[in-house]
Image 1 (tube, one colour):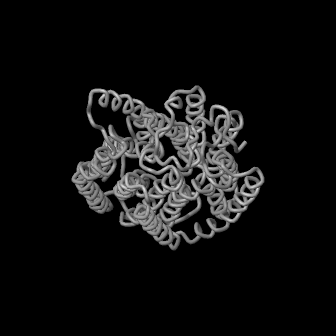
Image 2 (tube, helix red, strand yellow):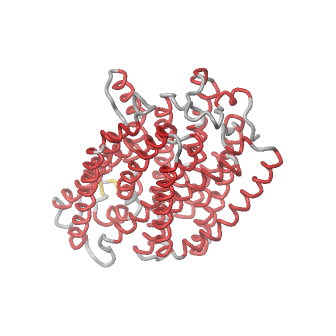
Image 3 (cartoon, rainbow, N blue to C red):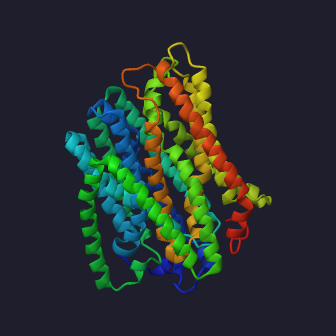
Length: 510
């Protein structure tokens, strides 16, 4: 199972063939097309469980389990941090010990068990269930992205479109998850909701087994070892999973302390990547790795604001927005479907539109898209103080303002997230792709902790009114919005430098 053969072998690049283009024959094969379509389907269903936890955890902890808002936000911050932070380790564990497809399935199994514990065992079940869910979801997302990126040659222009389509599939899963979560939220039937969350994971497991041969790894360190070494690494990989569970459980219990640990690890990884870049022997690759590090810092600002959705923005929506829209009561989770609708519709449209512009000679490149994304999410924050200033006598902001905010944030997400994933295959040297893909995702984990800090700066909604809390919300939204816009200006000033750093071998667009 762990070996490349047949059509898959045509995608293999010799490890000493540093950065050279693969044979042109790899550009169109039925295996590649079917593999991408299968991953789109798997991505959709594997996202359901995460969508439910992402949109409901804070509300479940405060409404059902009696947690304070600060405690619930802290758990959500660590939840996001470990989910995304473990992506870094997932790239290493999948590529060197378990294989990406094996790790993906094991992660899905852990998520199913985790959802059951969260649904049925109260506070104790929450911590153990989250530990199992996070170990699964945190490790296997990188596996999906690596399985997809391995189906394209480095110079294949269709990689970006494939990731945009895959990103649309992920957000289709979010749409289904958010919709069902909102339905059960109105009646606070959390047990049925968490049991539903496991259904998507089970479907993803079945699909992976049905198309097992299409998902084999290509040119990872594990594909180069002997069968006996492969079996030894498989056992070691499973042992690592079992050791992770109690560690994550303890860190969830002490969420406030764990957040400092996440920041420290993120800083250490960034420093190590800088050192690795400085020591990299190939000049062109070293230059592109430097561009990657600069863009990583810019993305940290974006994701810190974006991760407010399940924390501070969720509580703001619950308490300070008029959720009665034309006689319909809107569940807080449904607001996040604004994001998924924009992504699902806008992802393919953006891919087609960018391809059209590029054929006409326009340069739509990564630095420009990153700067634009920061502008859009900044505006998404800045429209909220406008809506607050126009709130009624009861202090409730009109629903349309949160709609506008989420549309702007979603456009920003389309400009940075799938492009960031696709960028790894172009900027990262072959031997560092797994590590750099994981590092890119880890940024979102660090941002989740920062979002918890920003949420802590927002007013406490306990025993108060929207009129009393609106000034505090308006102040923090203004600070965050203008901070993002200023960061966008800095990236824009650096665009010429970034283009020179990226250009050496990626001529048309990085």
